[in-house]
Length: 529
Image (cartoon, rainbow, N blue to C red; front, side, top):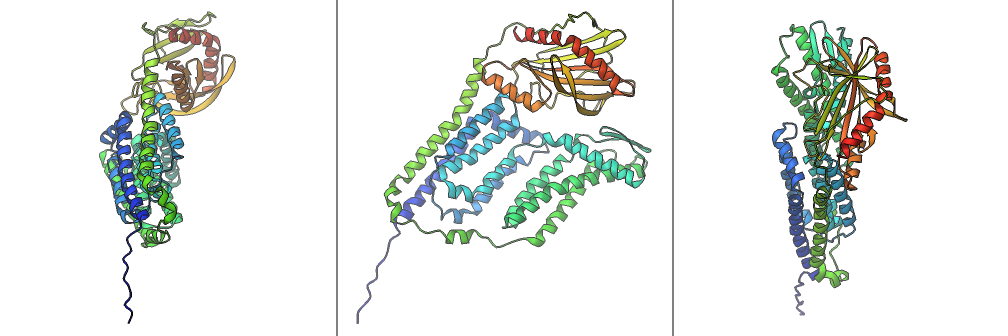
């Protein structure tokens, strides 16, 4: 009888060494992520400080732990994958770093924050390769929700909520008089302000809804549908909430839902809506995990890879070093650019004299209204009169701008949201003649109990003019990148109007036509000091 010979086959060196390389790559990737957050410490801290002071973005503290938990939940599947560095991603990393530089020079904090978080994903992709990066796609993408983003949507959300509420009131049979986001019904006055925009509900819904969709569904279609619903439902729910609050106040003779109680009611209502959304979504849940089938379809490395097994860790280490070098160069370059630009030592002064002699300066302004600017280097406020017509000119000048002390900032407003008798009845765009060409400016209608003002405003950035804040930021970044400094100005002209703005617009146009050369000359003189 022949006894079969038993042969123990040891694991191939490819599998063992590749997995050791994967573990080393994971540790290197983690180290690089920490190094990136430290190198961009100002941007990192700006996110953390926003999380700590804003209830709207407090969820940011949970995003990194959530992402780490999701990665930990895939540890068995990740254990079947090999780290194969992808040096091509270094080019993507360089683009992200340059984009961060532009955002920093333009003081667009949110954009810079997005670029730092995106660099984390790109670093993992470059060091660990396509296969592992794809397996970690959602946890890495979920990190983007750590960025305190959404303030840009507030005006649109306010307008939608006001439109929805007013339309619902009219359909209910209640007469409404509306001016901008302020409206009056027979029982009292209401306004849709930032706290009523529903941004908190929207961000909370999107953050939870995205995580719920990933954990509950496996189909990409179902995930995208649920994420879309987590965006649409809170916007509609906030409109319904605002309408119900107004109706509660109206029916109670303005005794209920006019103070803190309507905020409490709002969160209770939002909680109910979210509970219903998740409950309905649970009917289409998919519990089967498809990751195992993916790992089963992978073949084990064969002798074809053995020639490079010993170099696996070395390639990963070299790629990690390249990632770190490319990542850290941008904050160093930004610091160098800031030091490169030299400003004059003289104090910035603005003097606008009408060379045409048509408009005479007067110390008495049209009203007590003044725009609010934080940390401006210089301001110019003056009234000009011509044949019974009167125009106020406001110039706010900024130099050596920093985060929080900059021209284009949410803190710089025409009218404060609270504590003022003035309110902004509406904003639109208007094309005017500005010097030798036509420009689009912002037009605002400002009301107080005793007077109404029509205001036009636009930016002057290093000799160029625009009313678009995003284009102004880009111009600012370009000027700083080229070493031209960051001098920037907002110009506002305002005059009274009664019923129609057309007559007031004619007055403002005549004033600008006559004084534009003097204003431009004054700004150039100030910039050269």
